[in-house]
Length: 287
Image (cartoon, rainbow, N blue to C red; front, side):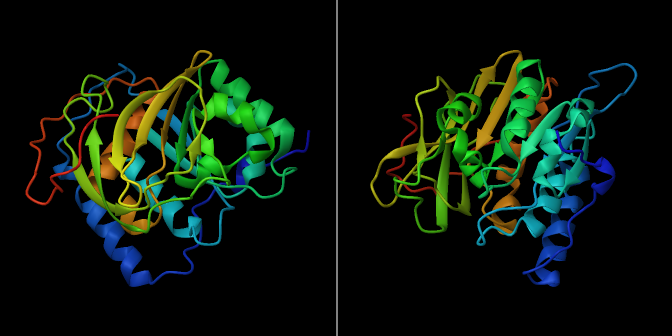
């Protein structure tokens, strides 16, 4: 197995977007830390944090991981029980040091089937099977295409390039369909500007937490779902196209809670009141 140094862990350099826009979003998000409606419980007497590793460094050219990865780090670590690192080399998944973490966040789409390759995939699946958490964000559903049905079993649903990809980037109304799950307990339906993926495929049993209705075909698609893999927990959401989409406070809350759940942390319910003033009347909550 090729060696990999976790000494390469660092926050990505910001490219391809206005520094002003990114700084504004980052300031707005971090400025909400003290105002979060979610009070984090003390899960361990020793205050030992769960360790989360965001694996990024490659994606479709329209997905600017160089800006979304550092923002994703900020969003997740707003739960002060989560310590977050970012690594910009997908080959990190080959390393035995993966087991130093509690949860892995996939934030990449690889195009070379040898990078990160079979060794990395097997290492990741063993990590989750033995009780590690996994979070799959946006086009990470398109990672590991070379392993097809195997990745479907791990991620629940994966990108099928033969399907229509997604609705045009625009407003989406996300409906909460499982109000009893710890991730969505107390969350209300919300609007966001993002891509509604209609390209997810697979028959692996999943628990759908949230859905959205396509403006193109009027069908309802999963927006957030969970599953078990061995002893591990998997949270998957195709939301998060860019920094504006990730900067949506409700999307951020969903991602943060999903990561905490995958890390086997307790999640308190939030008592939000639904704001229906701008919600389309024809959107239903049926899965």
